[in-house]
Image (cartoon, rainbow, N blue to C red; front, top):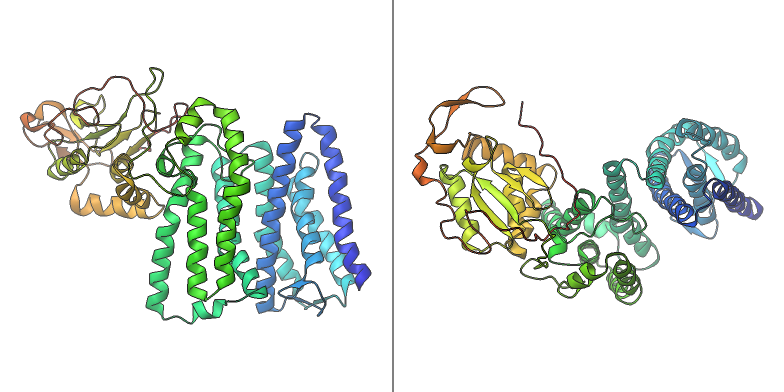
Amino acid sequence: MTTVRYLCLLVPLALLLGAARLDQRRHPAPDRRRDVRLAALLAGIAAAVGIAALHELSRLTGWYTFAEVDGTFRGMPVDLWLGWAVLWGPVPVLLRRVVPVPAALGLLLWLDAVTMPELAPLVRLAPNWLVGELVGLLLVALPAQLLGRWSADRRQLTARVLLQMAVFTAVTLWLVPTAVFEYGDGSWARLTALPADRLFLLAQVGLLVAVPALAAVREFAVCGGGTPYPWDPPRRLVTTGPYAYLANPMQVSAVGLLLLIAASTGSGWLAVAALAAVAFGVAVAGPHERRYLDQRYGPAWRAYRSQVRDWWPRWRPYPSPVPASDPPPAVLWIDADCGTCRAVAGFLHRRRPHRLVIRPAAEHPEVLWRARYEGGDGRTERGVAAVAHALDHVNLGWAGVGWSLRLPGVAWLAQAVTDAMIAPPHPARPGGDAAPARHPAGGTVVARGPAGRRGEGCPTPNSDCSTGRSPQSASTASPACRRVPSPPPPG
């Protein structure tokens, strides 16, 4: 049995070295070869996490079990786990030019079908074990392959960001706590034994703690064109969203969630692990990251880091420099004839938003049916999302509200409630023209209010917020942030 365990690890490692050698011939450039290998590593991490989850599912369904041996994690031999992850993750990624995804999955199915029965008595298979095999290939091997291949070739940004979020969330919120509970103290049973109302409260607190990280991931993808994976980073310096207040929003959220789980499960060792992650970030990862970003972005990075800290947020957004080459401030176009819209403009104006201009929607070259946010970097949003983006320019508290409103599902619900009960979509037309206008979704709406009331939401021009035109200057966004088109009107 010991020989079998050695072979289960050494054979996949030998295949990995061979695949890396073939990939080296295909990618002689060192930088390109490094990117591909790090993408293969990411696929291996995804496969390892997925196989651990598949094992937990198999413990419930009985697809397969392992003999009681030393060196296991929750009953699964660690050497089999690692060898399995290598075969399902990095090896096919390194061979992606000659082995497409369908062929890779077919080969993996054939390999497991041949070798798994031969691993007895180390592996005990139930009659329906092939069901578990198919589930694993579809839910573990396939996502790991897609993530690794897309990362290696820098394709499908949105999809690979979502897959990375799934992997890193599983590592942070499930695999790390489970490992601590297995070898230290604490238990999931203590959490699941709580009353439903307390579980619901904990879930809400956890979501609030996670909001900065979720908003930061979105900012990386939309504005930076990159992902949270350190070796698949944004292509542009990102200083907007949570990064206008804090340099490490993802790490802060991850540590906060681990501490929340530690408190809920009574695990002192998990709290120690969370604090150890902070120490690692401060002493090891932080200096390396600062050197890399300093070399890549130079003065812009140094100016940013001189005013934004790693682990303690600012109250007001980062006051970026204002060279002539920078884009203008963001503009919030809002209908001055709509009472609710006018109240929103006044609310923002009283809080003196940084680098935000508020202008009457009637002055926009297009007929606007909802509030519209136009960042100096070219980013655009409509409706509730536009106001949520404007809150980024106020302070940390209101920015957090804005990040929450932009969460998937929350944004749609907030917009639906606003359209139905607060401020239905209506055209903002110049001059108080009462001529009927056609809504994109159908129906006729009449523009409202006299022209003389336009612009009352922000009556006093100043350097931060005005209803007039503003000179060219900088926003808190990166100058190179690419333009994101506004979604089409409903219907």
